[in-house]
Image (cartoon, rainbow, N blue to C red; front, side, top):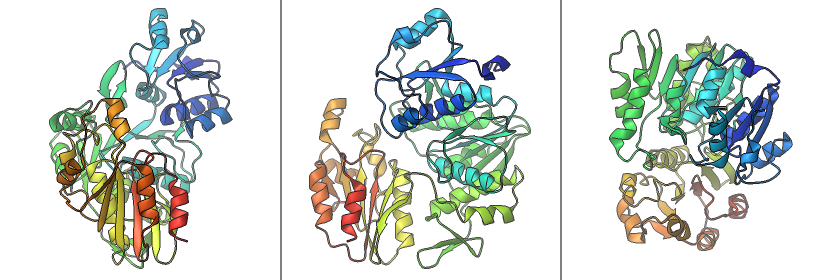
Length: 460
């Protein structure tokens, strides 16, 4: 990896971001502008909240679409996001002119050349763990940089780049760029890495479980001498990968700490109430604690700070509640996340019936051959509902999915299946919600339903 030249961190540098409209790329654009760089960008479509963020910071492109005329020799570098394709006209023009092209993770790595680099990985939990670390460090006024994939209460941006001595990076296993199929998390050259757990995902790029798990094996193997590899020993794959002996690498296992639930309140460390709930989140906080221990945060400091952590955006978010009913949303979409989130709500409210709605939205979840991986993932709720958009399946030219396919894959004959969002809305609004909770789980929008409005109607 070439070192990032000092000149690139100077205020007069001009950077153009191809696919600026992504959640991470838009935040990166703002971070670079805040560093004093001149930033431009392009995309074929940009939605909120990225559109509003870019507009507020005067970085929203005046026109949507790709235009090779945006690229000329006045630019010092290009940063390309995964949304762009390898035949993108702006990318081709940059290659023709010989302009330095960075992928997003390579650029972050170059900005962190003189920092201690801590990378949080895993199929699930990495956003929450990274958020815990950021919250605690902010609470104690520590100087650090970070990259996280979701908004956290109390921080304005999802990326901070400065002259801080340490950077916390949420590292994902998806491709680096249209030109580089290596996972992002391999680009950061970590000193300390954490693997929260592994569960096969992204089948469009990792067609087998083995090919997926191999990426985490590579991550572990790249831990440098005197480096640290923290891992969840309760996850069989993470345990196998990280506990393997590596020359002068310190493996540090963690597991779910002791906790209790008092009146819909999770309590850790004997008497520390926390706002997160569910066994998986107690486990996530333990991983964060071990990372923080290695950068100077004592257990006493950790427990004082973590009690006020509210979690990451779209993770176990309470929409509305009254004395008899609570309505939540969650980003859960993979089988392991689905099971953990539903179980967490049952643990929080054991006497209430749980109605759980899950949207098949990702490439993996809409793949008929992958559906069998959801077997047993939806056992916790008393009533399980699955929604998917047949139009999206037809548009993407995926194999059709039937109601019987869903029931067989989830191994629940009583599961209710909806393909019309208005019918799902009517069904839920007509239900008696006394002593019941509802959770919507998806990385999508349930066909554009106004979930906040529905939640308000349900608790009236």
